[in-house]
Amino acid sequence: MSLTALSSIYSLCSDAAGVAGNIFAFVLFVSPIPTFRRILRNKSTEQFSGLPYIYSLLNCLICLWYGMPVVSPGVILVATVNSIGAVFQLIYVSIFISYADKAKKLKMSGLLVAVFAVFLAIVFISIKFFESDLRRAFVGYLSVASLISMFASPLFIIKLVIKTRSVEFMPFYLSLSTFLMSLSFFAYGLFKDDPFIYVPNGIGTLLGIVQLMLYSYYSSAFVEASRQPLIDSYA
Image (cartoon, one colour):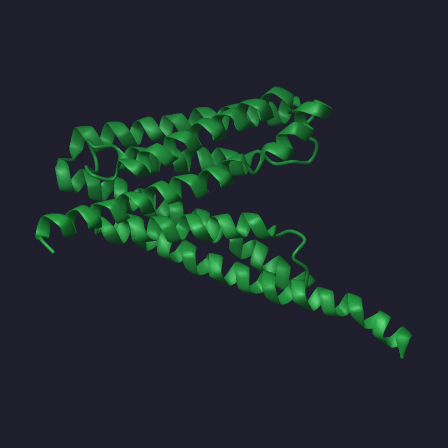
């Protein structure tokens, strides 16, 4: 097989991994829709927190900037997925602000302004003070820090599952989508030889495996526990 053919296959596999990551990420982006349907129906944010959506918006904007050709040529699928994510998060934050009480409205509005201020500062600094590889490294380290902290959030869910011995707060399809998205972008990063992509997503993949293992263990344990009284009664 010629080098050209091998290169084409390699490129095809790389693009396939990136597209798969975009698809699985889309599942995660639409997962809060039931929550916001409830907010719209009740015209109140109730006890919901808007902070996860603010943080997700900042994360998407930083990673979007990292995926732009002016920063990292050749990883445009990182930009596409995060541009979609940023739109979803901005819609969620806007709905939250619209139906929040006055105190939450002011807090969330301030945080939204801060997010865009931080993002614009990152763009300005990276363009003004860094050239080529240094620009990529500067934005890359910021995106890695942002992604790792985002992937670390399931640790609280994992702790809750172990403590309560229940998977009620860890939906299976959400955990599966997170795992598949992380795995896809981990592969995409390896194909692109980009540690700023494969390192954080490798961590996300490992955490996804842990979540799925816990789900398998505690859901089966719950089934066995629910069957036990029937067995005792029959005996």
